[in-house]
Length: 142
Length: 58
Image (cartoon, rainbow over all chains, first blue to last red; front, side, top):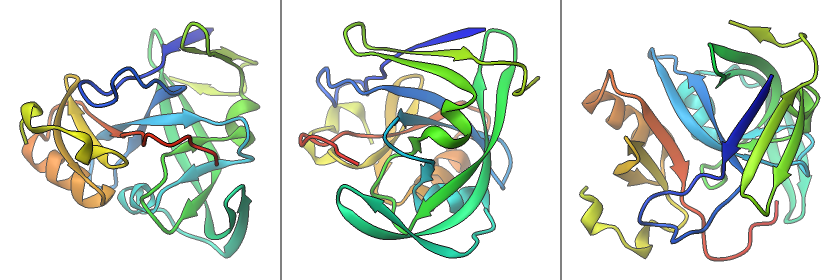
């Protein structure tokens, strides 16, 4: 199964600025789903969530840890989160370890652990596309 | 918020899209999503972060 996503452009705001993002759906604690445009980030070891997403999902936040980025060390809380990615028929559902930042000032980063090990990920910068090729049947599909 | 009122003030903020039109924006994700869900409980809403002009390095 191959999924292809064009880089998302926010209409009338970004003036053609395009990032390697894909739409991911998170189930809200209050019911229903919210689709979030997530940045595909091979440089991130794990999936990173801003605080507000963790609050909407009512995640149980675990121990505090430190995460080292190019901007220095920041405190994070460890947890696990589920999300789904739409495919032609149904969804891929993944449950992955996440690091939650204590700010809303970052996008959702789809890092390697739990995501890049489920898909062969191609970021096609020339054609502005992200291509996900399923590695195996280890992902739950429904 | 009307799409006609948008300007560079949205840079770095979160926006809610309904049918690829911005219907709201803000810096607090939880407040923004809960407000939009209350107004459009049965619609498919998309949350996206408006990029800044600076290069992003995480």
